[in-house]
Amino acid sequence: MVHLPEDSLGIYVHVPYCIKKCRYCDFVSFEKAPQDEYFDGIVEDIRTAANKIGNRSKYYVDTLFFGGGTPSLANAAQLGIVLDALRKNFEMRDPEMTVEVNPETVTAEKAADLKALGFNRISMGVQSLDDEVLKAMGRVHDAEKAKLAFRILREAGFDNINLDLIFGAPAQDLRIWQETLAEVLKMRPEHISFYSLQLEEGTPLYADYTAGKVDLSSWEENRAMYHAAVEALNAAGYHHYEISNAALPGFECRHNLKYWNMQPYLGFGLSAHSFINGCRGEVDYSAADVSDPAVCQECGPDDLSERPVRGIFGLQPESGSDLKGDFIFTKLRLTDGFELSDYSGMFGSDFRSDFAAVLPELLKDSMLELTGDVLRFTQKGLDNTNPVMGRLIEALEKPGL
Ligand code: SF4
Image 1: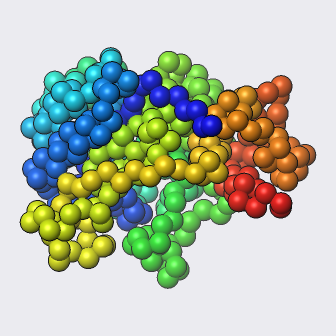
Image 2: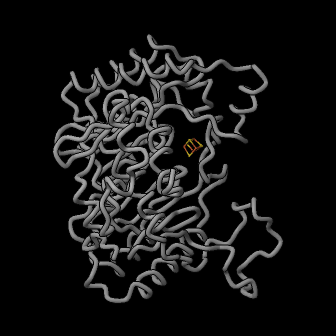
């Protein structure tokens, strides 16, 4: 029987509006002003979810994360009604409250609003401190604006700030990346996320790349940038606790740790996922009652921006093997790895047996290391996370491999 930890709950709220779409972005976000109706719809979904979950006392919320999109584009009233609904419908216990901001939206007034709403953690998409790189990615801000926004947030009293960075971006080489890293480390944010640029089909950057108009770094250059980041972060006293995340001790992101530890969370808004009681899903717009006049029947499946925001929860129980796959994709992301006994405790089966077809080879190839009961990526494995995880998942899908 699958046993999942489920005493505390994380809540994610998706705010799908941006000033301008970045050239590499395939997140669900639209270039339009945040709509009141969207936030009203989320409030309804919060009530529905709280009713469906039933016994409130079973869960308490200890992390909230407003992501996007650009949540800081929403006004205080729009964010406030969602927070009020969450506070009314769920028990809160000293929650970590993160809001994502775009530097271009940060003013002293905005920072004061976010503080007054109760947010105690900021995640700011800086991506680079090189103007050419920012321009090539289609970001709306420049480096000076990002630094100014950081100072404004500090002056407003935010003492837990994450900065998001991207490497492997167009117009960026190792030297430019190292300069950005050095400047960011001087700013001393409590948390730094550093992701490799993902080239997503359907984005303007993808079109330019396939047309040969844009150069991107080679795999070797990309890995050199990753290693440079890990080295610089370690030297500066940050704890590299997840493949792409590092924090000053004690500032690891509690909300994201829930994802990586398979703890329950609820997601509200377009494309937001939930995972609770072994069920996974998102607000299921396709299953919404089409006789409801609030539902626009004209919209095609791709036109999410015009869809109603109110839907029903379409959470489906996951099969045991899907959950095992989730376990691999989440727990292995943590640089400390996981204890094999966690796996057997959760699934009632032995990790070594379930992955007998591939585990010895991955250990022999030094992709993974097993120390006592703890399995984790090696340095070499960290450069090959996708193929390694792919092999483990394949072993689950084809046990006789
Ligand atoms: S700000 Fe973020 S969500 Fe908005 S378009 Fe840019 S990358 Fe996408």
